[in-house]
Every structure is written in C-alpha cells, then in structure tokens.
Length: 109
Length: 120
Image 1 (spheres, helix red, strand yellow):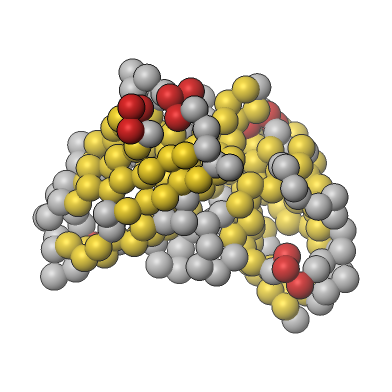
Image 2 (image 1 turned 45 degrees about the vertical axis):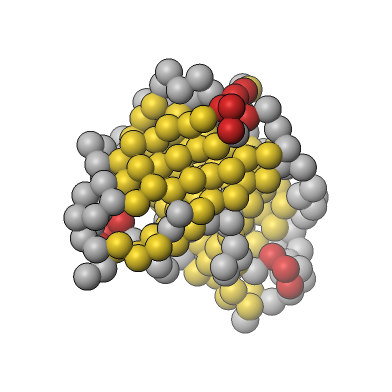
C-alpha cells in the first residue's frame, strides 16, 4: 500500500507570500494519478491540480504543481486571503483505491 | 452544472445501520465511476468505497470491508452506501464524489457531505 506523506504539517504565512507544499510517496507513482485538493472549514474538498501539474477548471494560475516518481510539490506563487485552508495530495492506486496525504494546513500569520 | 447532494446521515448507536444517498445531476450519471470518501472530525480524508458506472466493479477500504455496501441506481441518478455494524470510529462526514479517469484519474466533483455520528 502506497503512503503519501505531506510536509510541513502547518504553514503560517502572510498574504502575498510564496509557498511550496510537499507530498512524498512511499514508492514511485505515476504522475497521471497524482492530484491536489483544497479544503476550507465546513466545505467539501475542491480539485486544484490533476496529473501532477494540470490546473483544474477555474483554478487561478498562481497555483502550480510539479514532480514525478516519489516527490511532488504544490506551489502557490502569491497567497491570497481565500487560499488559506488545508491542502491534500491524493493518488489513484493500481488496486483501484484512492489514497490521501494527511494534509498541510496553510494559516494566516 | 454538476451537483451531488448527500442525505441520510444522523445519529446511530454502535452496531446499528444507516443508508446514505447521493443524488446526482448535471451529467450522465451512468458514465461515471463514483466514490465515497469520509472525514472524521478534525481529521484528514479517507477513501471508503468506489463503484463503476455499470455496478460491475466495486471496491472497499479494509476498514469497512464486510460492513459497508456501495450501490447505485442509474435510472434515478442515485448513489448509495449501506453501512452496517457501525462503530464509533465510523463517525465522520461522508462525501460522495465523481471519478474522472481518462488518462489522468481524479475526483472532480464532491457533494457537501453528510454527517454520521455513531454513539450510544
């Protein structure tokens, strides 16, 4: 079973800052099966990035994803107030299962 | 527009049963695999189960295997999760989500969630 480990657990940042979130897989995975989601309090997760680097419909270009193999990153080039929340990476496994990382919380400093 | 609306959550005693529903609209429901994902209070996301468009394929997380059953009614654009032998650790918000797998695979639309509380 593939485990996704996200780091750091929490980021305290100010609007306008740039940040990079990490997602590390316990074994190599296909980048086509790596996605990122944003979740705000009391809301359902929202798809941000799929295929490791493609932005979902309506997602601003300040969000970008990259990586391959076991190391993937989500970068927010300039934080807006509405970007604060919890970010999850997720992979679709060969045994037809979905695995999520434990999440990175991005909070206002 | 795509909409997923869960219902059926509530308070149930340990060992009890509950059936969640997810009403889909805005897309050809039978063309898509669907999943249930849950989130315990203050915790992360956990995939629970998936079902293919024709219901021919299903799969479950080990934590619910043998207790939960996923099903769908394509004529009524509805997804279900029958939950039996419920435990305190099943307490969570349950989301239904649409799967898109066309090269890339991801969960592109989510419902707002339905809270299930297992407590005596």
